[in-house]
Each structure stands twice: as C-alpha cells, then as structure tokens.
Amino acid sequence: GAVVSQHPSRVICKSGTSVKIECRSLDFQATTMFWYRQFPKQSLMLMATSNEGSKATYEQGVEKDKFLINHASLTLSTLTVTSAHPEDSSFYICSARDGGGLQETQYFGPGTRLLVL
Amino acid sequence: AQTVTQSQPEMSVQEAETVTLSCTYDTSESDYYLFWYKQPPSRQMILVIRQEAYKQQNATENRFSVNFQKAAKSFSLKISDSQLGDAAMYFCACLDNYGQNFVFGPGTRLSVLP
Picture (cartoon, rainbow over the protein chains, first blue to last red):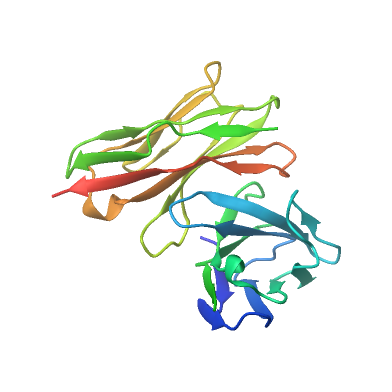
C-alpha cells in the first residue's frame, strides 16, 4: 500500500519557538494532504486540508497564522507550529490521498508527538 | 455536515473468538465512502476496510468484514478469529463523494484476551 512518512517522530521544544513537521508521500503523488491533531484517548480532529500549489483550507477554530501549512510539491507538505505554547502539545498526524489510485482513501503518516515546555 | 457515532468506547474479545464493533453515521450525501481504520499502540493509523455506499455487497478483507445497512446508516465491523495483534483503537470514518469532508467517529478500544 501507499506509504506516508513524517519527520520528526517526536520533538520537544521551549515555549515561544517554532517547530516544523514534514509529511511525505513516498511512493505516490499526493495532490491533497491533511493535517490532524489527536489528544490523548480522543479521535482525530482535522486541522486543515493542504492542496499542492495553493493555500491550505483551515477548519473552523484553527488559527492559520499559528499553524502554517505549505504544500510545495506533490510529495511534501509541511506544518509549522509558530511560537509554540504548552497548549500546542499534542500528537499531529498527516495523511495523503493518492491522486492516481483510490482517491477517496487516505493514507496516514506515523504521527509526530510535540511537547512544548 | 456528516457525523459518525461509535457507541462502544471499549470492547473486549477472547482470542480466536468473533467481535463486532458498531458504527452509525449521518450524511446528506447519496454517494459516499465508509472506512474502518485501526490505531495500535504505535499510533500509526492503518486502513482496515473500505466500503463504497453505492455497492450493496458487504466488503471483506480476510478476517475483517462489514455489515453495511444503508437505510439504517449502519456500518459495523466484524473481526473473526481475533488475534492479539488486533488489539487497538478502531475508528469508523465517512467521506462524502466530493472527497472534501472526512469525518471520524470517537473510536472503540478493542482488547483481545489470551
């Protein structure tokens, strides 16, 4: 099946710093990628939809200036948490849709655990 | 807007036995897709099975099968011959035909007892 990678898998940073998380589709081209946030013992909450070459679409309540998304190529999307604060600590998961295959199916990365001190 | 409900926060099953996880959904779309994803302790989301709403035949993947009742908007997952490796959180999800609205249920934590 399609493989999606995320880097880093875990990051610890100080409050006020910015953190970039990369999401890559390894064996397919992803015209659309998604960024989710998951709190402990809860479901995935969609933050934004990232389309290659255009601006991301953010869900209601998600600050676009706080969570910067760039989808510069068909295999890479990045999420930058700017001026991170302890309340931003969470598990961030990206997913990608295979533009050439089963387009309705999302393939997920392994996630990134962010801890802001 | 779509909603997905999983009424069982936790379930347990004896190894080698069969278990059914419930999922109901609500959508105004006539054509959509339904999914079951598994999230083991590693937290990697893994696709278990998918169903196109326009297909009446229930999807099957090895030990995993679904009971899709479109009129009742029900999409349950049956796991046969349960294995220890099946222990995980299971999320039901619905995607509209335009592929823009992917909604997850709250999840069911499945424990497999040896």
